Amino acid sequence: MALTPGSNERVRLHFGEFVLDSESRQLFRGGEEIHLQPKAFELLELLVSSRPKALTKLQIRQRLWSDAFVSDASLTVLVADLRSVLGDDAKEPRYVRTVYGFGYAFAGEVVTPASPDAAPAMAAPRVIWGRRVTPLVEGENVLGRDETAAVRIDVPGVSRRHARIDVRGDQAILEDLGSKNGTFLGEQEAPVRTPVLLADGATFRLGRILLLFRSTAEHGSTVTDGSR
Image 1 (cartoon, rainbow, N blue to C red):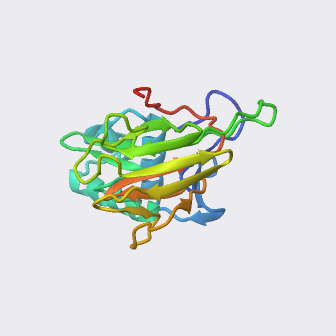
Image 2 (cartoon, one colour):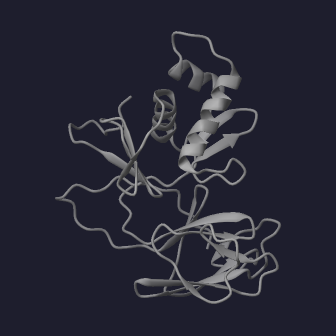
């Protein structure tokens, strides 16, 4: 399965803290190789290469087990194994999204690093929720259910003005705005009480809603929210 766009150059795909190298069949996290069973690696490669398209369970089974019959249960176990390695949550997926009654899709933002000769791209701070990418502006960016929010998350459990991200030059600061269900940084169980600095790739939650902050230059294609 080729992930390269018709060239002989080796392409590594970045998503979150992971790097997928299809040519060498390796997955890295923070520079350290993560071992995946062969079928789990093929599933990840298939979903990433097909993004943002959702694949039916039948399509996935035919691609991964072309010479054998397997049940949906085998695919379910394989998806669970892949999520376990990625630290993903089926209820609030960052990477592997279940399309109920249909199949699966890759939900993360994938970046293909530019070639050395490519012109450098400007950093673009943004918040990612599933496949929706919302650019942030210099200054205050409110997150919440309010129609005027810069990053509108109109779901139960999120306050109208839940939190804000202040962008000042190359810094982004996250602050809770007295929300009912709290704002949480990364895997921390205690809610944010004072403003905290967001690093590129940081995850945070508004109640139970998981979001991703990115600030590095974007070389890959993404789905951008243009409803502001």
